[in-house]
Image (cartoon, rainbow, N blue to C red; front, side, top):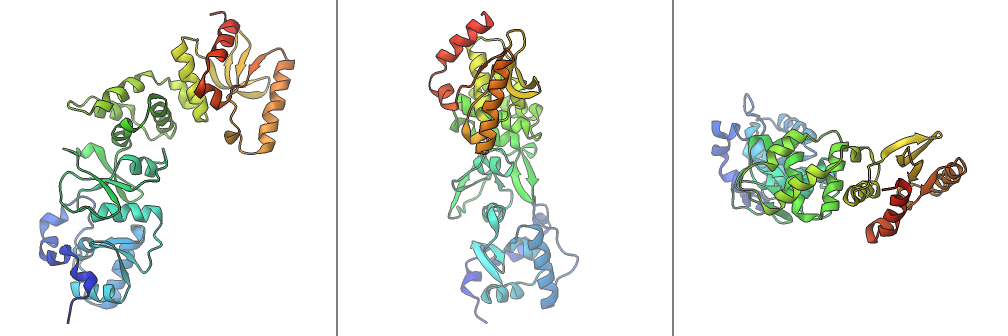
Length: 335
């Protein structure tokens, strides 16, 4: 019987014997070899479905072979459209509506054993920062460059830099932060570190271990400096403008305020108790809706009436030129 065109494009199929070897079973993230070959169509269907359901509807040819499924059965399913090609040697089960995580996993599988989601895509998977570009994948070696994938080939991917999150092989959060550091200015990098810390997923010890390795890129030095400067109180802030305000205070040599505390029963962003001074970072996009925006300004009037000095700089003011605000704060704090 002629081999269907889709199957003929898969070098993994031609290396099926190698895929069943003991070495293939040691490949990280590949499924274990089945205890016996699956011959019956119904059993093959169940096995494929079980694998796909655990892997965002995505499977690789090498995984199916390692699972003990007969190559002839796989070719029939490809020919009948039950396994739909996503990349060379990577398929969706039944339909291509696999979602973002399925697309990430498909890209990783297409780059071969040992590949991991990395850089901005890894940050997105970890929930730290959204990524809208090509899926980014890292691997140490290999020649295949799948279409639509931004491929990185670092000199090494130590075991401590690699893990699995939501069923997807991915670089550790700490490695992803260091990898992407060169794409941000200091303020953006500080926001990223704060968001990572706030998520509860960041290990500072692991981050410093990555940063202190010899032979790092130029951006590593800047990431190391910003990491040292990030104030732990920044983790208590709720929005990027608030993170920026703490950085501005630190750079200007102002005493750092209390963050997100209750004053007169009202939650305020920044508070200097001795000076009865309050700063609210004012950004409409972070109020959520018009009623919340109105309530915040009503709160300001109540605090002023109670004898507090309140300032509401906008995110744009902080970004463009905070000089006037800093002069006002220095006078109020007598510094």
